[in-house]
Image (cartoon, rainbow, N blue to C red; front, side):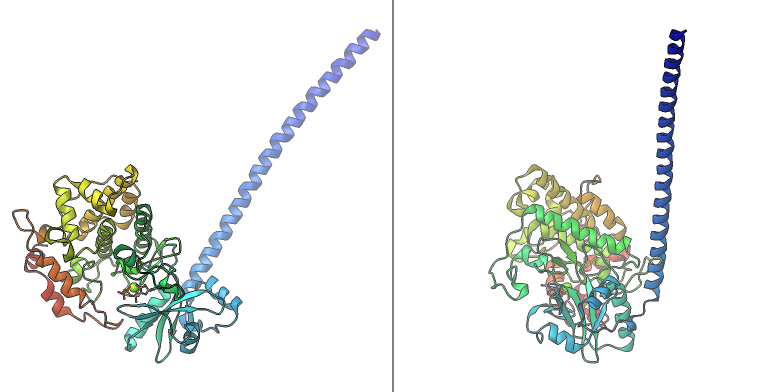
Amino acid sequence: MGNAVAIISSIAGAVTVVVMIVLIRRCTVVKRKMRKKMKKKIVEKVMEELERRKREGEAQACDAALDDVVIEIGPVEKFLSEILNEKPMRFSSEQLAACTRNFSTELGSGGYGVVYKGDLPNGLAVAVKVLKVSMSRKVQEAFMAEIGTIGRTYHVHLVRLYGFCFDRDTKALVYEFLENGSLEKYLYGGAGAGEEDGTAAPAAQPPRLEWKTLHGIAVGTAKGIRYLHEECQQRIVHYDIKPANILLTGDFTPKVADFGLARLGERENTHMSLTGGGRGTPGYAAPELWMALPATEKCDVYSFGMVLFEILGRRRNFDPGHGESKEWFPRWVWERYEQGEIETVVSCADGGIEDEEDREKAEMMCKVALWCVQFQPAARPTMSSVVRMLEGEMAIVPPVNPFHYVMDSSGGSTSSGLWSGTYQSSRDTTGRDSGLSSVSPAAKSDDAMIPDVIKRTDASV
Ligand SMILES: Nc1ncnc2c1ncn2[C@@H]1O[C@H](COP(=O)(O)OP(=O)(O)OP(=O)(O)O)[C@@H](O)[C@H]1O
Ligand SMILES: [Mg+2]
């Protein structure tokens, strides 16, 4: 009897343990399910909130009128909140004079005016571009519209616009300051790096950039342009891509400068009827900019291709100092490529690239450059394809001759004067004196600069 009771109680004990285990497991599963459900709810809530903020942000951006951005330069908090609010600030000419210590440190000058180094009261370094223009009412409106757009266009590879001055006598743009200045001097020498901040003693020769750095600069620049063309709210065609408009941070991150200073392209309007218009810099400007053809964002692709050649060769594309066969570098590159001697280009690039991976990148850069400078805009790749090709994520189809329109029928090249003349004479009439308001300062001379052979090709396009 006693035995039976013992057996029964141990069976009951065992059953209780099993039931307890089952219950505990059930509880864990239910808990896990509840946690999952809660997580999902939280994610949904966060997404909703983000959507709401985005919608509000967009609505605000649309409503933002520029005339409400007059600020006092003083309080740092206000300054920071304006920056966080993504609005370009308005400076008075007195404030600019104070920032730049009476415009005492000149960083350089270009087609729109002189650029000065400055410091905001909170220590932020700026570059102040004082525009040498007298603006008609129409141009004033365009100026404000463009500032509105540029001021809200942010990307790691675009120079940031902090503000502007729109006083009676002073029109200026206030940009973030880039310590290492423009790519131009690293490609063909010139003023020393560090000279821009006005503190370093002028060095005779800027440091020689490693090939990897140059490749990074090419990719970063391409990403900046891709953002302008394909990703930002209002599509922007730069029209003046060139090494002087690629600025470099202290660690040589490239940022595209001066975007939005030419006219903007509307999203739905892919072809602009405006031709030339004093835009672009000869040597980099696509044929359609100096011929009576519609210009699209593909003109930036062309100019970027020209920049790639200069990066490859670390030289100006046109340089009579290299002897007749090499004086126009892009054509020489094409001739080498056509002869199956791309190796020669790569060997001469950067004074000879040793690393196998770097050689491959140089070869890719060479092919991408040849594609970018195709005569027909439609034959040029988009900037997103350019980025993918440069990063090795997209196969590159063998390029076709981009220069058939400047080469004679036997396949040889026409006299180098065709291009050198176009390039040289136009370098001297780059519209350096043109202002925002100027429309085709040299429409007539532009035409005169077009070689006959190109005019003939034009007829067949
Ligand atoms: N944000 C900046 N930070 C540092 N240096 C700058 C900045 N902006 C311009 N510079 C310097 O000023 C020089 C002149 O610039 P600017 O844009 O006026 O002329 P450009 O680029 O040669 O010609 P363009 O007028 O056709 O753009 C540049 O080459 C660069 O050295
Ligand atoms: Mg510039």
